[in-house]
Length: 147
Image 1: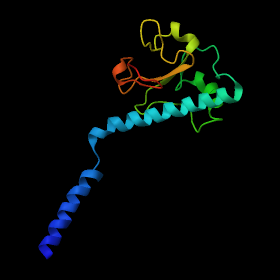
Image 2: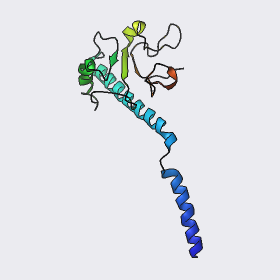
Image 3: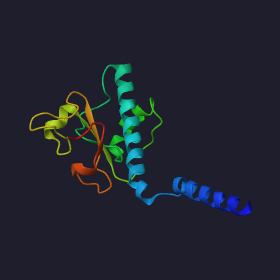
Image 4: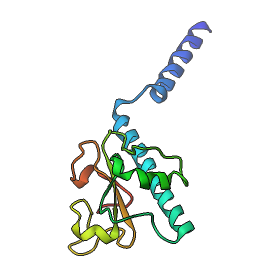
């Protein structure tokens, strides 16, 4: 009886270990998911602002770098709707950008579906350039799905 009990405990320990041991391969996914959550909070705050005031809180700044002090007035407006703090960065420590739609044509960061159509053509794009911080679309985290 004691041997069966020992084997059962050993097998149970192995099974539980598979689920509760930290997985180093899951870390990039966790950081991406947390960055998606940050982007969703910013987007929700922007939409809440639009619903209350009838427009987005953008001024004549073509690209908002949410980790730059020039974005503090915008972030202060968004704080009224969501629990966000300056600086807003992705989970890799890189900047997150907001590009209002009226500035897409002059922006090197705004993303296009095709040669002439932009993603979120009537609102804004929120973009993190992922762990490498470059504009290559493979690891970008955005408020739209790049195809």
